[in-house]
Amino acid sequence: MKNQHTNHLIELLIGTLFISTSGVLGKFIDLPTPVIIWCRSALGGLFLYLFCRYRKFDIKIKSKKDFSTILLSAVLLGTHWITYFYALKMSNVALGMLSLFTFPVITALLEPLFIKTKLNIIHVFLGIIVLIGIYILAPKFDFESSQVKGILLGLFSALCYALRNLTLKRHIAQYSGTALMMHQILILSVLLIPFMLTMDISNLTTQYPYVILLALITTAIGHSIFIHSLKYFSVSTASIINSIQPVLGIIMAYFFLKEIPTWNTFFGGSLILATVIIESVRSRKA
Image 1 (cartoon, helix red, strand yellow):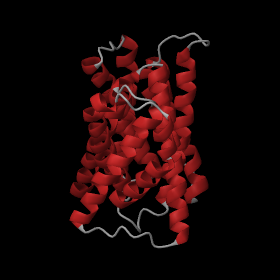
Image 2 (spheres, rainbow, N blue to C red; image 1 turned 45 degrees about the vertical axis):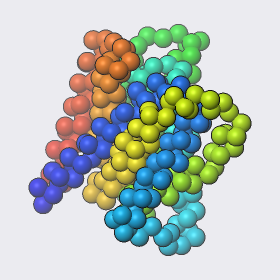
Image 3 (cartoon, rainbow, N blue to C red; image 1 turned 180 degrees about the vertical axis):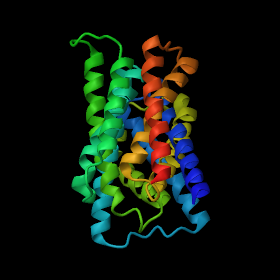
């Protein structure tokens, strides 16, 4: 059992690493945000469909109720992605990712309302530590600057992400994580078609390699692994472990975008890493 737990934990951490590339790619790709998300959804959905066919996964939606749930989760996912990418472009990778990662706290507080479980004080405590780490990491800013707007968009994105994960939790046993992710982003690609018809997509000819990376590594592989992990971890546990993403994103931004972290970044990141380690050990014992 312990070896299985370790394997599931390693898979979740790999998925977290892949999802962390969204910060650098979202900031770097020179396209309108809805266009980026459409490309991410359409290409990611295609990759996942081919993978599902290859692995012979059952991709049929079993009921109208399930379709309604998947549709709602697709809308929440799309809103999360769009507001998150706007947050990245209006501020920077560090600030955008850190504001998003209030979602473990939001998840821990909302999970009892969705799953009918008792509020776990440990999750609240670890969530508070994450918030303290984010507070230390966040640079000083002017409330009239675009950075504040980026933070607010990041917070709203966090709410949508938490709601999407909680919405899917009830149905995770009936479908594979890959099939669920495929359905969500294919639905999202249909919903975003009007943006492709009205926005400037001329840069797509030069940006397509990065869009493919975003669709394949970040979306198709990373998010499928994360959804799959919900079979073995609570949403709160998976969310708190995912809090390592800002640290990984800041490191990537340093190497690829030359965004230099401050000492506050190291101190705040250490707190976030501490919560990941504590929750990993705690969930294993549970």
